[in-house]
Length: 234
Figure 1 (tube, helix red, strand yellow):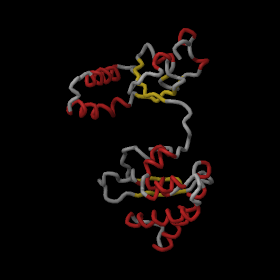
Figure 2: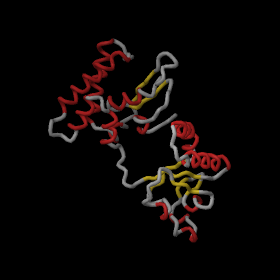
Figure 3: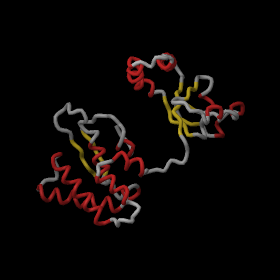
Figure 4: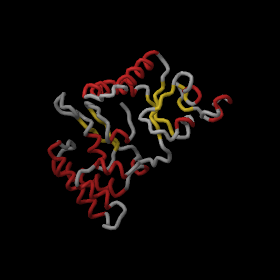
């Protein structure tokens, strides 16, 4: 699997080996959390490499330099370029100290640092975005074949269970991985007008609706690609 920084938090996957471009230590920690996540294959490996000047387009210099310093110190102390998991606590403790020394209390980073000290990485992820999202997105189910139609039917049947029993919740969790294979995140400006502003967990677009806004091969349709009769929808 090849991924952007989105894999740093909230993705439940289990990889045998993680190759990670150099980043602040808290981001490295999050990527490492996807390695041997379920402890099924002995020891996992997280291997760091550095693309030429790649990090300075994404991460803060202070955090990068603090990370580099504590890793170099750990490698020197261990006399090895392999840092075992048992050293992670002390590595992160040293990292937090390095950052405190470099960032003034009134800095814009100070709140983030406090969350990092408490290992509240999910909060850091919420407050710091690599790419600022400038529009609302919606989860859209694209129904384009027999399998997708059957999945949507099963989904609606489960939702229609008025009792919302434990069994229904379990059935929803079981169905979710298959269902999400047909779900696309639509920017608000792409979504047909009649669906905007409605509080729906998933918007449904059937075979008569999605072609006006979405192509199964190329993705969202540009305005000039939308047929005249569909212009009112997209």
